[in-house]
Amino acid sequence: MMRASHTQRGFIAAILHRLSGIALAIFLPLHFLALATALNGASALDAFLELTRQPLVKLAEWGIVVALAVHMTLGLRVLAIEFFDFREKTLAMLSACIAAVFAVGLVFILNAG
Image (cartoon, rainbow, N blue to C red; front, side):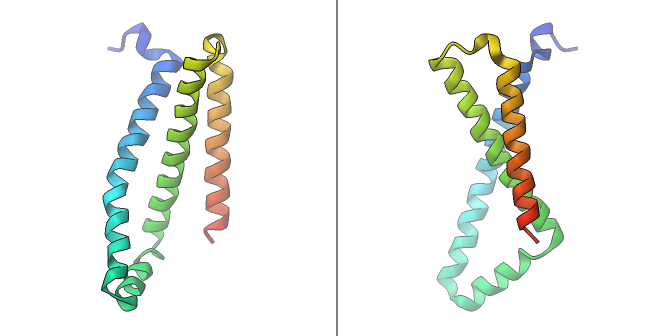
């Protein structure tokens, strides 16, 4: 059972910020692996890039872009709360974060074709 404090918007935003950070931390070694294939020559990199054309990889790319947008916007929310007097405007800030993440995800998926 969740405590009352766990159902507040700020708690959910904090959990999403942490989960998106974990997703980015998992992605980073995979990104370095992809970059390392370039050291093995152009043919190795081309073979790896051919894998990125798969629909599941495209979906994963969209997911990591959205995770990056979530992490960035919620991180900016934390900075705004710490440095400015925005504690009473949490709903407005979360709405702005959601709108920014939605916009970034939509732009990415529309340009991924």
